[in-house]
Image 1 (tube, helix red, strand yellow):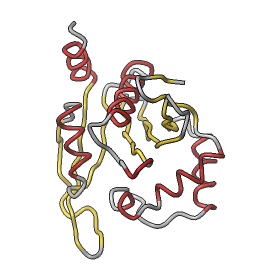
Image 2: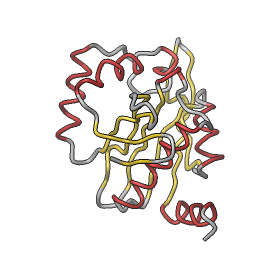
Image 3: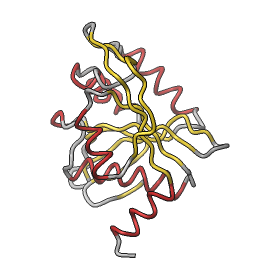
Length: 185
């Protein structure tokens, strides 16, 4: 278990699948995911079974520390152990928050970054975000100093409208420089 101020991260359990499917099928959230189709119970179960066996992904339930309630999910996926990089995935489903500058989001992101760069020894954490996902782009660029490394033009489509996707990255040396400043070191 990974504990922060307002949240903790724990392994995903089968009893979490109903909430996770509900949030993943939220139409507003789904517009920001690579998998845009509505997920069935079978899809969710197959995903979970694959996740349990995957040695290259670490995906967690995000829980409210005060109530122990499941509030979201996030993790480091598709880890390339040779170059020490991982795809960052994250959302807060509770209250349709998705992501923000509020405690749950910031604490969960901080926890996942610390785990990735510290415990896993990653050199780079990256994510692909769509241009219409302004809130998440803003949080990761402004609060966590992710950089835009590239743009994939017309890489996503919703209701017949194309949008670009941005490749955002944070390197370990940037993370530790940022952490040093935050912690007064």
